[in-house]
Length: 126
Image (cartoon, rainbow, N blue to C red; front, side, top):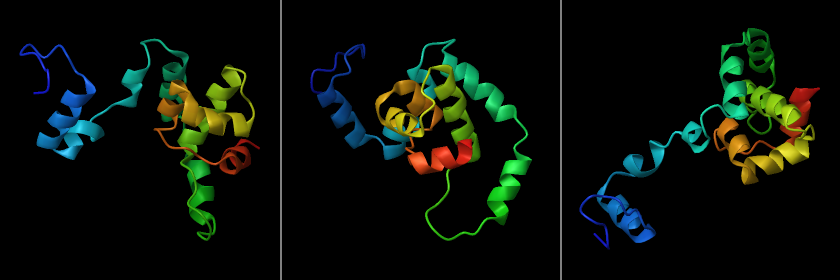
């Protein structure tokens, strides 16, 4: 298809678009693991694993008892990951962390490619 050699070594844009037309959407987009975007041993991956194992019951209790008006809250584990990694790399500002979720791969991996508002990040970090 569109210049794709038989051995599958060339993955140009035209081939990718054509192959996505014949495959299901989940095959093209949903199977991507963002952790694969970073090299093995990257600091963001080091931060990610321990945060997943923290006992977050106290945080979840606050979320469950909170009023459900307003915009949807951010997942507490994601915010903890972003704050810890942000402090490790010298970005303690919630606005810089928010911007980094759009521009920097490590922050995108930790946020699950979501972009929490700086207000959500700063409210969680205080």
